[in-house]
Amino acid sequence: MSPRDGDGHERLPGGAASPVHLLLRLGLPRDPLATRHLGTFLVVTALTVLVTRALLAASGYPQLGGGGLHVAHVLWGGLLMALAFVLLLSFLGPVLRPLGAIVGGVGFGLFVDEVGKFVTADNDYFYEPTAAIIYATVVALGLVAEALHGRRPRDPRESLAGAVDEAVAGVVGGFTGPARARAEARLAEAGDVPGTAETRALLRSVVDDHDELPDVVEAVSRGAVRALHLLVRARFVPWLAVVLLVATAAVSVTRGLLAWGDLGGLWWVAAGAVVSGLVGAAFAVVGLVQVRRDAVEGYRWFRRAVLVSLLVTQFFLFRLSAWDASWGLLVDLFVLGVVSAELEVLRRNREQSGHDGGAATAA
Image (tube, rainbow, N blue to C red; front, side):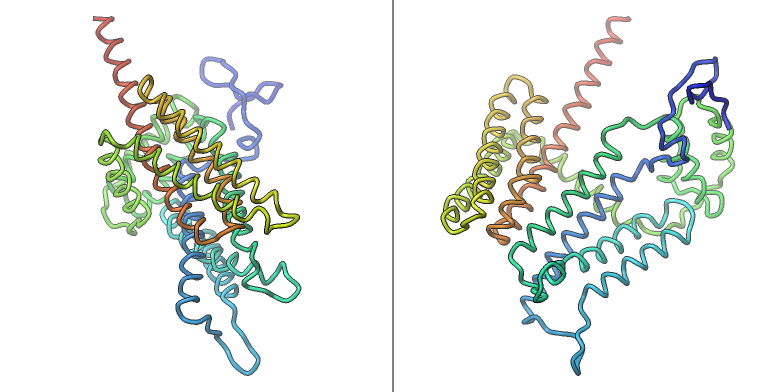
């Protein structure tokens, strides 16, 4: 272990003290790809719920079993979650995590889809607030993932651990091109923390081998990012984002106003849909004004508008109209993808411009 001073700080080469986060002191480095895996899990969960509801409605809600027995799909969900745990707990390295995220997401989706049966005295699968409960659960898990992985920069030791994790699969099966590139990128991020030189030697000793389990998640995400990057080059994208955001906000406000008098003590649901819808629309309009002066700031406002809709408005709308909310959710996710892709392009261009300007000044 690396030496530490009396305050629990690790001594790096040269004698500098670097604070060690509690999770690292407990031996819990974060997976560099955790955000992608958790996002896959949550997206698959939501898609599973939507597909399950659609298939059950189309087939007339059949029951599997007989003689007084009913094999609910919550049981299949539990089996799939158990299978995901078995896979993830049985093998070292990162190779099976994408598959585990998919299998676990399908299982959790089947499980949470039947939450209405477990919060009502009469086991009511069609309990009205079920959609809002499911959506709130998915959003809450997303916020937990953001709290774990989005608020604290990656420590160099975590990057080193990520490189070693990639090497775990490489030492027994060899490195594919992408796997080697990921491992070397993690190692570059690690800098000069203790163990870097040894890890670099380990990576160099791993042979090339192109046999690997196909990563469906990686293939889909690459295709989506490529398509989004092509789309965001169009000049109409800011107007498209605003139109879609304002349209979904208008649906939320209209639904809220129409249902206000029929909700009785739940008037706050309608109020929440109206207020959050108006706030999201206002953010979108501000973004359209800002994008002409500062494109990055304008798209940040678009992103705020989408997040208000995703995290707040859709929750209330699922309580009022699950069908409208489902379409609104798909629109929000599309706009979020477009906005995120454009922000990435703009930031990259700004960084490149600053780098070129600095080089010209130095010359």
